[in-house]
Length: 120
Image (cartoon, rainbow, N blue to C red; front, side, top):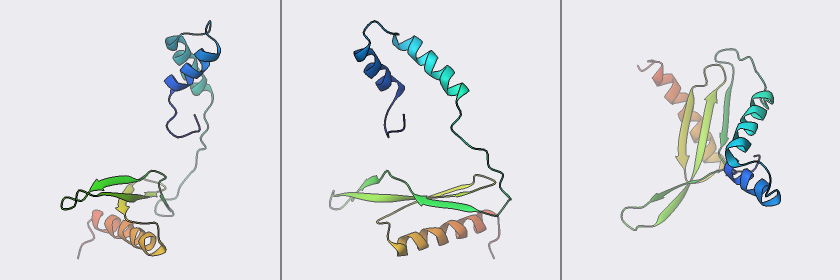
């Protein structure tokens, strides 16, 4: 499950190919869900409001089609999340250059500022 794009069904297929007399899909799913309830690979973090903003580019790219040339353009996806509120800002840009990164961070802060009604 740590690999991108892996589903429970894919895991069951791999398991069933190795164990043809093993669990059927429904029972495998139920056992996996029970396992996930017992094992929580997350960590609780207390956040002070306004203290931190977590930022990064996602691993996945988005694609858009240029309406004039029909060329497919791949875009990087920037995400910023405020720690306490989980307020999220997402922006697609052409690259992960320092200039684009700084611009995205500025845009996230400006967006949050105006979303609070501080427009004067």
